[in-house]
Image (cartoon, rainbow over all chains, first blue to last red; front, side):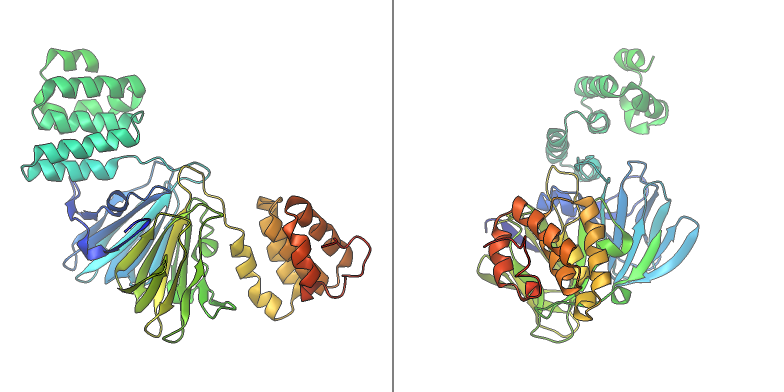
Length: 214
Length: 209
């Protein structure tokens, strides 16, 4: 098929969100959709986590669409149940999170920054790559991370995330090089993360790390 | 933060019979394109037949409930709730007919590599109820609002001129029609046959076809 593709949201990969356990269904990556960010989150059981707590400090405005089930959203200081067909608009900087209020809940999220062409941040790839690594497929994880870097090689976050991935995968030399590049791109941001990011613990004792962190 | 249920959004019935739910416009989303379409009965058009050639958009159509038969580039596909079609090629003709009553389709779209621009057709669709009610002041207001963002948009200027002609604002209609023709000469031929301009066609300054 050329120029179009059909798929079911249920066929999207299930990617555990690192750290907090939500289930990301990476729609944008799967389709290669380029104009803006779009993904799906799903929960199998009531009370399962659905949308990770965050504030979109990227400057993105977001629209959440409850595709099936019922989601219990907290946006700002307000908590409410959102049945299928509900649309929730959240501006950048507003706290938002959701859990499933019933089994088999699914929410589509779309987002981008007003007035700017969309540039993928690569965050979906991080979670996908780590899931692949944890499943024992380090080569697939590495390919996922390299594809993310290829999408936007000048994003400090992408280089930093590859460094984390390689550190955990035991590729110390390469991890140090990606970390060096991330620092060149945005020293201030990287140094906020360096002291407490456990992903980098496997390379923390390396003298080159000490030099970069210094 | 704002919350709304799809069924609580404006339901704007368009001439082809499908019902536009103006999601982007309701929330004033500026960063990307998003709309929804519903239908009242099975067999009705739910996504109009069109291409995205002029806008260059990639589009995703997700069936939120019910079932729809999509025709993409001449190929038919039946999609149920939770299924989507991603049309990456803007040149492909696409459209859909609802197979169940009360089917709903969400449409997401934008141009890769470009900051999102609100599509001018949204104002034209939004003005349909006012035009139908012959509330020309409201139809003109909706067009003027869109024109502030895209002052050189030929189709918007042409449609605005139509509303102004119907509303008896002859001078405004002539000025906006002239500007539309300056930008895109094709509008002169359209205007020569358009019944909206019947009352002003003999005015000096009406563009020659």
